Length: 289
Image (cartoon, rainbow, N blue to C red; front, top):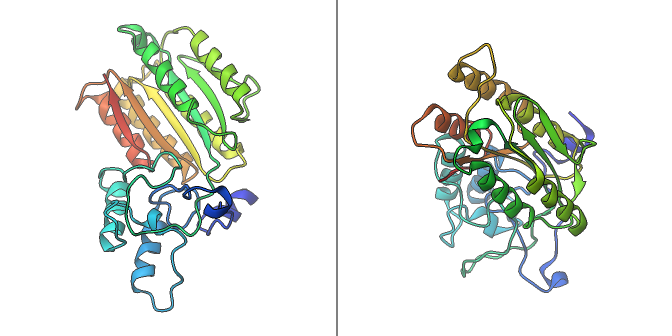
């Protein structure tokens, strides 16, 4: 485990943005109670400790601990988070994927906002099946929309995959989300053409490697795909099952993996794969028709 991971994993992030210094409400990510950059069991434990442990220190941000956004910090918040993590429950309300002030008026406060720098790494399917009904164009739109939400404290990189990988930037390392780099990345996304075949496993592992190389405290891999996988030598179901196992094993809490299913029908092999990949890696899943 790297020095950065030893320093930040399961510890309280002490670099916060003061509301008074910024002149606005603190920004936070709902469910990141211990401010380590991710949502996991330790956040549920932090909620319970604040409620029941004698001598427990006050929470740094009650809004982050209000996982169900009902204006109170209760046992139900820990239950809500655990349900999302382990029982495919609904994700916490906004701000969850993004770092933002609380949109809900309530009596809770936030003594300090989260350290909001993050890594956003995109793995985009450009296989032949993504060209049947405009799926690749929709995938481009989804990626560009996420790029436009990044701040200059974030880092990003993009991978398109069919039988092989193509990357932005070509050097294969995360780059700062400056306006100039976002413009270049957007131009590159729009120029990528469709391919043929589809072997997403190596691309998802490459996305995790980007997270491993980043120097920020929160990393997310976004997989934008129709959920298929047709590498030679295995049936699609066998290949997707093996990919789910290998990617989840390689992740080990490094990054959240969020899946966006383009044109995916419910209860199909592809739908199940994307849902299981997100659920097994603390991410979210949504379908775009």
